[in-house]
Image (cartoon, rainbow, N blue to C red; front, top):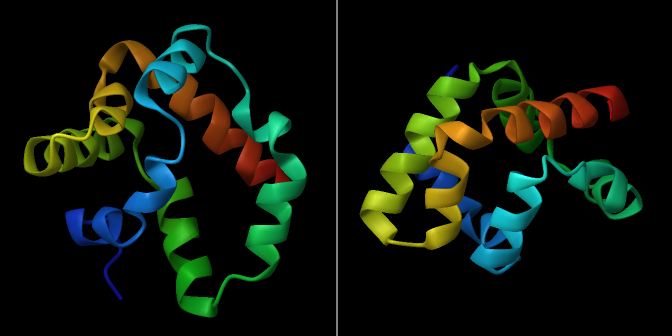
Length: 108
């Protein structure tokens, strides 16, 4: 198994990144909202149903450098033009990503 997240991994779960419209995601990122706490029960439910391979990928994401993750989001935006990826690639929203990943770590 690869120890880094790839564009292919992002593409595989792209539907999760694009659930929220880009303008809502950007508003949440701009205010550094804790989305994990807002959707805690849904996230826990989803995490309980992960396969071992999916759980491994989740751990890779949680252990990844935020800058690297944002590079992958920029790559995904360049390939797909989905605005949600542009939001997540924005260096101004680094704290938003870090905060929410740390909240997921607490749940594990």
